[in-house]
Image 1 (cartoon, rainbow, N blue to C red):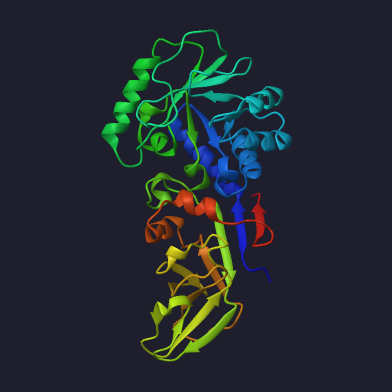
Image 2 (spheres, rainbow, N blue to C red; image 1 turned 45 degrees about the vertical axis):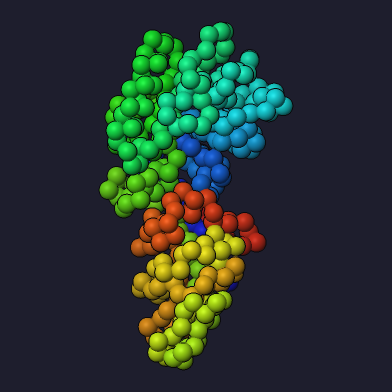
Length: 339
């Protein structure tokens, strides 16, 4: 039996892509598959998104895009992060599109000029003059998930700076922008988190018609009774107030079940149970209400255990948790559902 199993439902990815296309109302959907598709598998997710109507895939780096090019030879691939001199040549050879966020603009390769309208990171203060192969003009929304006024201010700045352009694609919206701000959709939207059925607002994804694509399962590897006054885990952070059955799950922070998820809820035998004690590198404990057999299923994420809830416990965002799950075969079995 594997320590845990990750299941990615590509049917859910396709349904999310179609939902986003409906929301975008004519704007193109560009699927963001950086960080190995937010931990879901960039090639599988990218192919599913393209099959559902997305017209491009976006990565953070040239190496990420080159890996996709080997598997998806005809896909339109756009690199959103900076590229070094050697990487520019690789991009030309592989028919990639690059992002230019400084005055050093690559030649003989399609570029997307990035304007800084308020993110305060990479980006030009104004559009440059000169003959370059401009495929698009873009900006990056800083707070579409939490600050409507600033988001609209950014959108207005971007529109003012680009209204006179013709023959180039304008794109600004991320998942939150696409879902909440019609004025931010322009010609295309770069959607990542929503494609995977996760909420950029930290709420139930079904509010926006989204369906989580990831499920993470494990099992009880050990069940034991802790006497009153006894403890489990490093530092004795949990001490039994009474005789208590606990289960040990063979997953820990090395697998991506973070140390700050103590207090989170998982499902054991399809019942919600709390995570107790200090989470170890390779294991954590759950409090049980009765003795259960070794091998009892434990749902860590999905099917009643939303990643958004884990993020609230950990004081972070679901993006970070999804990207942090280790799907290497040494740590977990990975299954892809194509339905």
